Length: 410
Image (cartoon, rainbow, N blue to C red; front, side):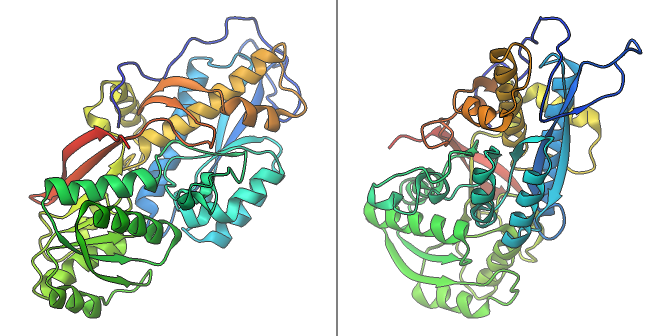
């Protein structure tokens, strides 16, 4: 979703076959039939692979799988074969924590990609940190995950050294959405709703604060519960306040139904949300036309980036059952960042994985920098992506269409 011209595949290490030790499983034979010198490094993937958010989770899993396949095909790290092991969190924090524990217990897993949900990430971070196991999320946007609970007061402090992300934070996304609503869409009276989850509530709060700072009015604030289907009460409130717009912090299963019911209540106003609603399933969830509804998402549209052309082609060539969806490019880049960290650790240790490979890979991730699917991939002192590009999408004739992309500036 970002504008860089080169993709992903960097030059492989040119040294001869390496004998790698520690933290990996040995294959039995190499291509010549002799004793293998390769070590298998496993990348764990945690995402909702079943349930209402599986459309996003499967795209995450498949995109990391593709990164591993490209690395192996091109011998990206001489002496290393990458494999992916996936874990289903069903968007449930307790499942995510159990999955994190399972990854930590598997000594072959040297890095993890995921999760999708910020609330799930909160349950996993401490488990990974205690084991020095790095995680790179392609989708978490809650600022507290990387900058601490007091980030809003300006007291930023990184809670966990093992946490990184390739998606920008809601500090950026929420303000970007408010600026579009106020300056471009000319909205002045917004009704703000969230799903009471870490992602949704945080995003809605940041949006509301920025919208008011710009001069707009928040005419109402309410909450819904995940997996509820009847939002008639909230929809009536939207109608009665005379709001000219709605902002929703949450995910597409509830967002699509909310859009439907707000319009059925007689409030013919657009609903805007974050990347959590940017999925075709948002449109499918609504029985009423939601043309005009809006969503922001991190980065630029993958299909429009020169840097993503090879990724899009390679993904199609694999014939995965599910599309790469909203976070495919970020998931590929998250997996590739781990691969590049492994590469740096091997090079710095005379062609071998050290006994403390996990800790060294975590350290190396902070220094990773490459041209990826979504643009320049690197991390700041908090583990956040340095790439702050975002896009506004509008539902037009029953499909999401990009209407504005830019690099956010404070």
